[in-house]
Image (cartoon, one colour):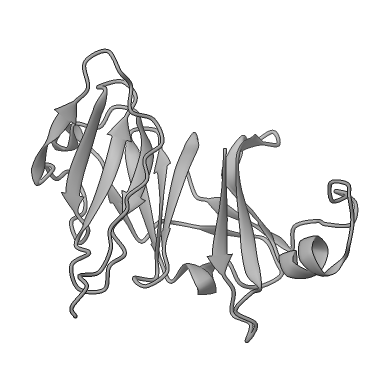
Length: 188
């Protein structure tokens, strides 16, 4: 359902973890992320003209989200050490994703906090973007497929909270994936 590049815990800044979201795995219909490492070696250092073979590039681990299904879009904020993913009618937040997705054995985790409930106005949140600016980044934005809206919420809020800015509707258009271009102030 999603693909995200995450900074890894290695000393090589070019080495990233690849998170691929999945839903409905196995008889228990579990949802989570397959975590791949050594992306640089597999895709950059080794010349090739074909797609990576799935038999050689397998996940180092799977991270299952306890009790959650229907995972959607992901937003990763490396400066804030935060990862968010939409799920059902909620937005799930995970602190310290570099540590969460490190290791070599499968695990089941719970979100650190959740935004959801009637006050949020979220029915089917889909696109999400965290403002990752160091000082000014205090919000996240989420699109809703059912309500045709984009809402802004305080980044530190949790639970059944109202958006701090009323949801913007787009008529018959359905905002889907969103991208936030938030830049630090340039002081010359």
